[in-house]
Amino acid sequence: MQYLVFYPGDMPLVISAPHGGSLEPKSIPFRITGNPRADLNTRELASEIAGEMGAPFFVAAGIKRSKVDFNRPPEEAFNGSPGRNYYDAFHGKLREYIQLCLDRFGSCFLLDVHGFSAKNYGNHHVIFGTGCYNSLTGNALGQLSRVLINEGWKVLHKHTGYFSGGYIIRQYAGPPVVGVQMEVCKDIRLNSALRRKFAGYVAEGLKKIITSSKSSR
Image (tube, rainbow, N blue to C red):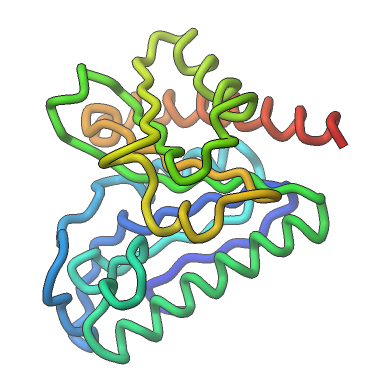
């Protein structure tokens, strides 16, 4: 579908990037309320992680958040039926890919990629949000966090408040789906070389999670 990017995969991993779009089609009205700003280069980061992984399921928005916010409930996400059509297509494909993961592999890890620029988080590079899915705080998140921490990245885990997990994670994560919202600082996202390096380490952690899920079945 125009303005949306979908790729099927062959592993129990779904990567979503709802806020990285930059397009503002005239046919879609602007949202009336809510944050209109894009999470710059999160679609690129998500694509680079996907490339490092090989063939995960992939869902990304090309439409800017000012038109459709795919990480909000429908009553807050768009203004009128044109935006609704894209919103429904995005979430329909996300649900389809999650179910395909469960049907084929018996498990699914959902990585929802976002960006932050706030200065009051102790200069952290990454914020993992899991407040809406408390059982994630164990093995899966630990494996991903350890890879990043061991390479010198500063990682924060939020289980309450802002950055603790938005609509996509709240809607789709929960047994048997393991999900995490990953907020990445602007310094990483805007530096292409650093972003690719970071994507490689995220992929390393994701591979550990997938390997562990296979061995535990």
